[in-house]
Image 1 (cartoon, rainbow, N blue to C red):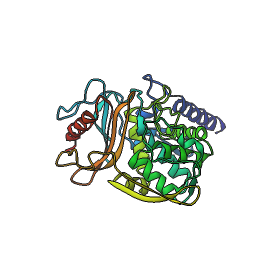
Image 2: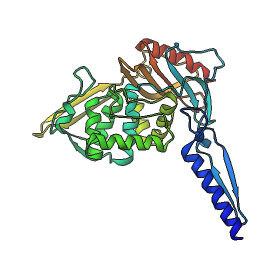
Image 3: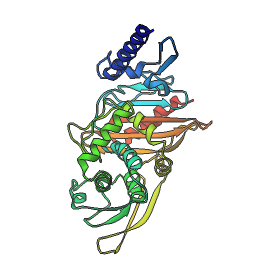
Image 4: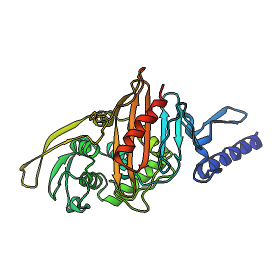
Length: 321
């Protein structure tokens, strides 16, 4: 009996070590390809559920049924959330700069570790942003709620707000970014590494189209996230260091929500996030639904122009039938 228990222990230990270390194709952890493994003992059957049992998985390109495609330099994928299928995939595990798609993870960490009614007091660091980067114009001493900050982060893509959120939640940006990387690993985004909460370019700041699907999928568990990404505009009032009111008013950067681009007739765009830098190109991630209300996540990274990322998104959404 003792020998049987000892053998079962070592079998379980070897299995767990395999899960943690991974093997197989470079850049893809074993977890992506596992289903169920049964470890039998004389007393019970222990089911070790594979990491990706509830996810759409693909370790290579997937050609769509409609012939839809994206330009050669782009990465893209469409993921059926309910049926756990990949409808289309092109280089979805290639590490790329995500630009402001980063803010999906920033929001996820803020919602998990912060409180939406918290009052954020800004430091001088909110002004340490590239002059041409999107911002709402925060100054040291300005105060706004986490709820207001999340709206500005996801709708207007404000980079100064990303700094304010990070410092409020973790005390400093580096500690917040460490949480971002921890949460990325926890949801299986193993080809992701962040160095800031806003997505402005850095050589060591990258993710993949597949990892963005994982992050979007996790963020969608929060009702507030789904509410915000569906909004076309937002207006609110916050205060400066002297208590004077400051207005913020902006429209979504999502051109599908604004009506500048249309999805195929059988698809409704619920919301999403845009991102653009010189290095990242033009990026877009969308939550959409079909006529039966089934949800999908679609993402394109590194499109050469803003027009093209939207045109190609409309094209690949035809894969949803």
